[in-house]
Amino acid sequence: MILFGRNIETPGQLAALCADLRTKLPQGAVVLVDQEGGRVARLRPPHWRAHPSAGVIGTLHATDPAAGLRAAWLTGALIGLDCADFDVICAPVLDLQVPGAHAGVVGDRAFAADPQAVAALGAAFADGMLAAGRQPVMKHAPGHGRALVDSHESLPVVDGPIDDDVVPFRANVRLPWAMTAHILYRAIDPDRPGTVSPTVIDSVIRGRIGFDGVLVSDDLAMSALSGPPAARALAALAAGCDLAAYCAGDADHTNAVLQAVPPITEAARRRLAAGAALAAARAKTLDPDSLAPDSLAEERDRLLA
Image (cartoon, rainbow, N blue to C red; front, side):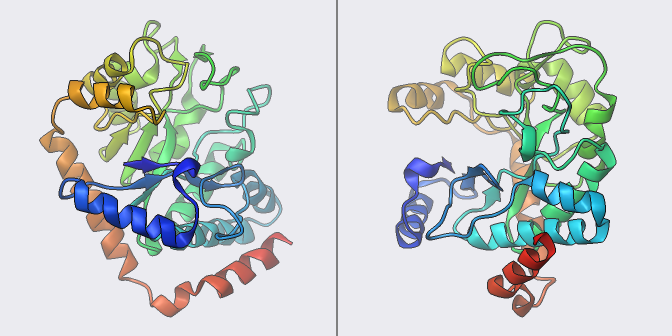
């Protein structure tokens, strides 16, 4: 289950909703939220903290790498603490800031243009989130930064190699979750966008990147894809996604997707269990006092001032 701003009002309401969902979901099911910081934030003031965008952290890292890495860790930890009602947080973004690309779809959601900087900052952000007991999702594999159009509105097409784009994902293959990109990588599969392409998933995400965690599709309701929602979900699962995310919130199409998709695979169950175990183990490695939110926020604000 993934929640959006339309589902979230106050901390008490959110806690009650998530508790109710867990009484109805199957054993081992997870509750997700998009909470990157910056403009992609479902939990917002006045009830929750505002968090900087990845681009702001990347700007700090460019002048003071140690401070940037610390700010990334602190932001991941603070977002993780804010999202205590959730199991999985759809962040960090490991896409590159590519000059000339569509700024609205990625832009300052990305840490930097340099693949090594993105890899390091994404790792620090994810480590902070894991320390707070939440599972991070690196996105959007194998790279969304070169998109010239917004995949919410139409299908981006990328020509040529994506050698730099995969570097941050390959450096973070230890993370428990990844999200696909709705992009047509013409040099890899000229016919199918990444989310529904067995070639992109098998040869690049699972192969070249080496990722063996939970692979969830980006929102299948986005206009980059075509066809009925149920057909999109079946195509994503057939291509190799473990989970197909349909996020429009309309009951009829959601029910059609639920009726169409097969039961979760044993491989996906194994990956889900491994992600939960990793977050639980990492959360136990730190003294809870070291994750006092106010002191962490004060430190981050000083770094970013």
